[in-house]
Image (cartoon, rainbow over all chains, first blue to last red; front, side):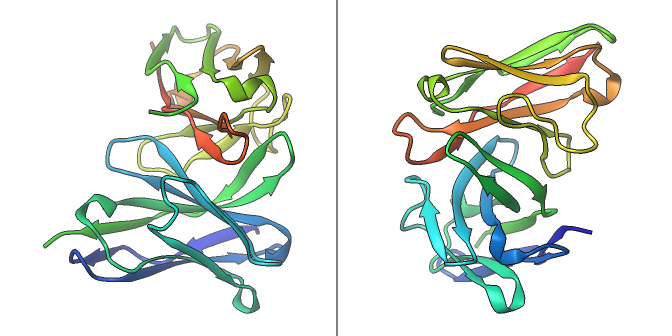
Length: 121
Length: 108
């Protein structure tokens, strides 16, 4: 079974760092993109960025460039999303998803269950 | 604001047909993918490319495109189709991917 297993919920204080994970199984991890999507409470989906674990090619949405770091360790089939200094406005659900990219579309066909990040003093 | 514009809410009577639209300049050149999200759940891909359904998605879901507008059509809407629907495609620069603001579908 193809699945993405995300790390558990986390509660942090403003200014703290955080790294959440997304472990793929049941497929060739290096042959698909991994995308990260933010969903703030009661809001829509926001595209954060994608990484291709096969060669670590990483693309960020302009809204998130410089705010987060996306990485992957293909030896353990795991992708990461990290912050160096969290803000209260980072409070959200974060999803990872497996992606297939073509020139004309990018589809995310398998999703993790999400990681809730709460940032509060 | 998103570069892909969706109506915030749409309603449909049980068993009727509903079209959910997504408008943006990039859609003249690129396809939209469509995701369904029910409360408390992760999104699910329902349509991608020209009009492709992943395995397990009912054939009452279909996609189409004309000019700067992509559409997701549900023919014979069921109660379980009540959800938020998000389109996704490239932004106007063509260099990045974005989601539409989402449409809340109510099945009456």
